[in-house]
Amino acid sequence: MLYQLHELGRAWMAPMTYWAEASAKMFNQQGGWLSSLPGSAQAAAGCELLYRIGKDYEKPQFGIHSIDIDGTVYPVIEREMARKPFCRLLRFKRYADDAGNLRDLKDDPAVLVVAPLSGHHATLLRDTVRTLLRDHKVYITDWVDARMVPESEGAFSLDDYVEYVQEFIRQIGAESLHVISVCQPTVPVLAAISLMAARGEETPRSMVMMGGPIDTRENPTTVNDLAMHKPLSWFQDNLIHHVPPNYPGHGRRVYPGFLQHSGFVAMNPERHFQSHWDFYLDLVKGDLDDAAAHRRFYDEYNAVLDMPAEYYLDTVRIVFQEHLLPRGLWDVKGERVDPSKIHRTALLTIEGELDDISGQGQTRAAQALCSGIAESDREHLTVKGAGHYGIFSGRRWRTQVYPQVRDFIAAHAAREAAQGA
Image 1 (cartoon, one colour):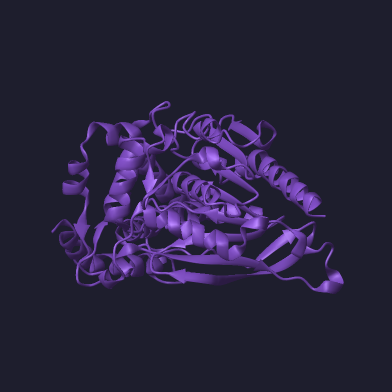
Image 2 (cartoon, one colour):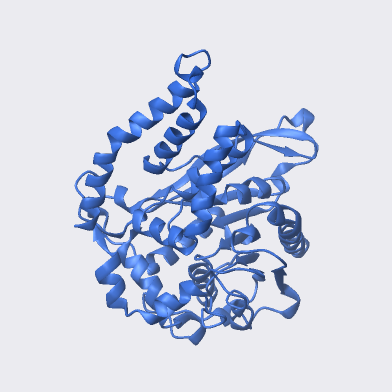
């Protein structure tokens, strides 16, 4: 019922939102009579703020059309390599004119970025992808909003997530692949590679795990505490709703994106209020650069997706309540997940010193679990001064984290090439 009420509220707000958008444009129009009135700048700013608070935020585009490598600009094409009901596998393919190519891009290592399925779209990793493209062939998982998946496609569980990751690894080719998982997918990625190793399958050359909840018993955060202090039935009864009739996924049980977004904002309400107030003042002052930065951030932050109920509840129970992975008790469709079976895949774990989502030690826990990997093939990095997002996006990611990720991947790609020769 809550989802239906939310949709009714959106429909009720729509005329006001359209009016606010049109009014902001009229008060801003150069040479228009409204823009010459006293207080027009304040009126325009207020209308735009109202519009942005009330509008729907669609899934953003990656918008990566070119990449500068060593001073040469290469065009980039976004290609869909595989499509499954709940996820697309995308590749960002770089093209080069052979005559002007300074190096053979075909020799660059292939990287699969496994994006989180935890509220935001994969485009949240736009900066991650753009930076990786300098030195790698980049693939990424692009998760589908569950409200857009017909109920006839069946359920999607954490076990299914693990299977998706395995299928994508096999499709790209594990023998020359490096996998990067950011936040939530560190758990299913570690499970996927552990199961492949236990079966004797080829596994990726390396895995880079960034800010993930491998063992949430280490330095629990506010997010972890909520999961531990509420029974699974509370999440079932309060957060799971049915998709209303105006979407293709009508009837599907989901954790709605609008509830997730409310949770995100509730973690730092003062910061968001101040950000919107600063946006209003920037518009009034004519500070267009800061206003544009605000729009870019909230176009991404406010675009959320619905998560399948089965997957969400599995994650709460298995990862945050029962800690089945670090306790060695997790079975995926009848197979026990044992990270000690991994031998040929190198491991790099990365944590932010100030991460308030995945506390210090939660990702590093993978080091002890992967006891079958040689010490020389395991590394850990704690990024000083970095919060959760800073380890994969922004200045610290580009200047501090990425160089070490790049060198780690290059070292193990070179080792594999040497062994193959």
